[in-house]
Length: 270
Image (cartoon, rainbow, N blue to C red):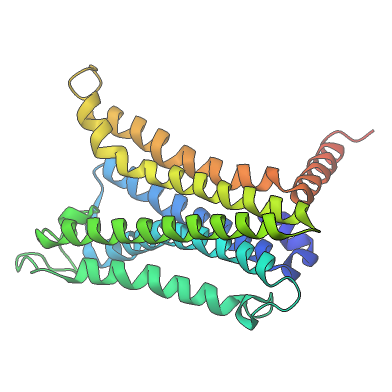
């Protein structure tokens, strides 16, 4: 999909496609960082904190970034329906980068605070002492998990309210419109899809619950349970979310079809 956006420049004239491409890049970074962290923990690889913290910051900020992107994409559909002729300047394709930078700032500042609060272990030198790259080993303060839980609840609550608000507003606008009801109906279904994508993201919060349920009922080693949950509740939802959105869009679907046909012709020349 990123290859399609790079080779079809007309997508960059549409704010919706720019936000979707941004979501693809964000989810790619999130998967890359989380897979690296997961493998390092499973293999019990230790290294100094100074190298671990950037990976944790990237993984946490991109995870939170996804929810904000979904809210932004829902608002973009709302703006497109409510202001079809004269969009606010920030929502035009040449200004959407301002909103994207704001999203990055919000999603990055909270993880920085999260890993900064609490007291440090004086025996741990961030430049030389090797540690396992997990949040609990970087910051063992009792405030840290409470702060993380509060921020996650806040983010998902705000995004849920935004998606619900945009859906209701588009629904009311659809009933009043006498023309172009097709576009309004598509926008309504798109916002519903963002709600489904948000539910896929929320599956990550079920990890502690599923691990505690599975542990007494299966004879798997703890690392196998951790891998099963990671695969089912983090990797698969991250894979499905952009795939469903991309294949639902007619323009993207046509481009994907042409791309696969071209690749097939190159692989099997007549």
